[in-house]
Length: 207
Ligand code: 5GP
Image (tube, rainbow, N blue to C red; front, side, top):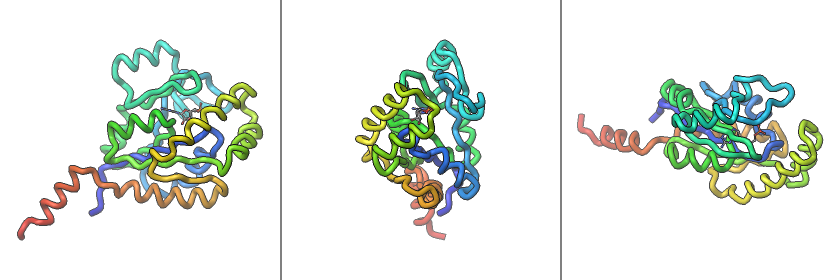
């Protein structure tokens, strides 16, 4: 049974683990996708573009969206609000796309609760804490205090790896990308409970 009603792929893992690099590498190999653009109250980093990397908004605007129930999920990460708007996700699912989220462990929890039967989740990390620390320093986009915060959060997040379907250790970018291609293709084939029931009913019908 080949389904085309859309599915969700959640990617979580520490900043610096290479999620964006892996996604960029595979985005043309996994069929129609919609990469969810989150809304955030954090400041824009150098090189980031509003509406491409995030929708950058004020705290007041974010709170208004919360009140109007615009978010599928939202969370406070590193002291800033981050949220996934429901509208574009619903539309992409209707179009049969694989919707990809780069969200934290709290966001993953919320998506599992609301849309678990069409969700596949992957935790992406560096092989070691030491390697993560090195990468964050080499990236040098953040201050020491911010890097320390990211490392503390990474230590807490890895404690929750067991909540994910897959663990991808980004030791080698090409290998990690190849694994994620397989996972993304399989994610499309996950069958929602309702469709299983329909399939079994049809399968049993006498011709
Ligand atoms: P950064 O500030 O480095 O872009 O992202 C910080 C963290 O926020 C990352 O772990 C990222 O996965 C998470 N994040 C980004 N967008 C969302 C979102 O819409 N919801 C949640 N829950 N987390 C998000």
